[in-house]
Length: 410
Ligand SMILES: Nc1ncnc2c1ncn2[C@@H]1O[C@H](COP(=O)(O)OP(=O)(O)OP(=O)(O)O)[C@@H](O)[C@H]1O
Ligand SMILES: [Mg+2]
Image 1: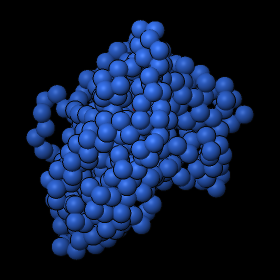
Image 2: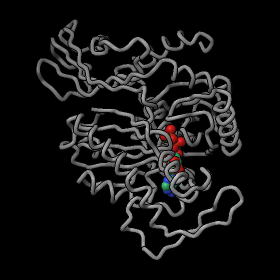
Image 3: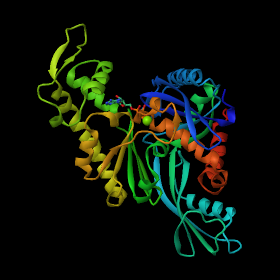
Image 4: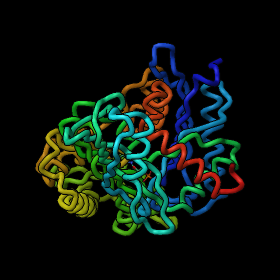
């Protein structure tokens, strides 16, 4: 049985499904997936918990399944956070170094200075992701500690989220007797699992299209530059099919996964499907193209919203590596081709990578966040020095403070 200090658990609380991924970290730093549990999610809307009881029940079932498969008792998890309450800002701070050489304290102070900005009262800082340090006008520095200089500047990406949403996630986990070690922005987690380092270096746009939300993250020069959440996902496609095909949500979702496509001209006109009707009526035959005609405008609409956000961010021209699509809805037939058309850049499908063990079980883009949470956990466990110097240290301080607001979770 795996020892506890080697076990890492990622709990992705999504709008469509809860996925609990259990991994074991080997002595060589490699991470092997040893179990997974999934359960349809019933208590979320657009990435946010709206029903605690149903969410707790779904989490419990997913965790139990993962525990059985992995043969471990799960006590603590890394969990994700998403929803349209999430905001991302770029900020910077400047301090004078104490002894003409940058120390960890200087780095802490400069990051603290960078996070000093006006945020709405109901929002709290979730992440402070350092982009680069500048020492006496020398820019592009990633590891400033030990370097000489008098003026230390930090550029950071600050992610904030609604306190209540974070509290509800922690509450749900605690009700299942789980401790939340860290809460990670979902696209930050997914990026760990699906992006390559060189893509992050030369510039890449990550799009995680789930059930309730579409999460964006833009990377350049190795670090995160822009984040955004659009409250539209695969569930909206399903809803359009419910109305357009006059069938139940469950059937519509199954039809979408099996026969759905978002480019009408990719579907042969002679392809026929059967639509199960509601109210005991007989199933109806229908050309498969009709489904694509319903889905295409909605996906286009979503892509246009992404394009607008890309333009707003100012990074559209800078993503030399193009775009990576992940999340369950990226599996819809034609997504990659349509994205290439709309964005006029290279697009690929992002499947989780970088883990061993039960790789096949977690190879779907649906598990990008779950696998990413594990890799995120491993990266920080492996490199505690780095934690202290950068976001994790601050994050855990922020986290401690957040826990104190929660009261009962301390
Ligand atoms: N093969 C497929 N073709 C089209 N859509 C699919 C396919 N497989 C899954 N989906 C859709 O993907 C969505 C679920 O994706 P995912 O599991 O990534 O969402 P989630 O993480 O639960 O939600 P969110 O991240 O929005 O909170 C559902 O809308 C589902 O219908
Ligand atoms: Mg998701």
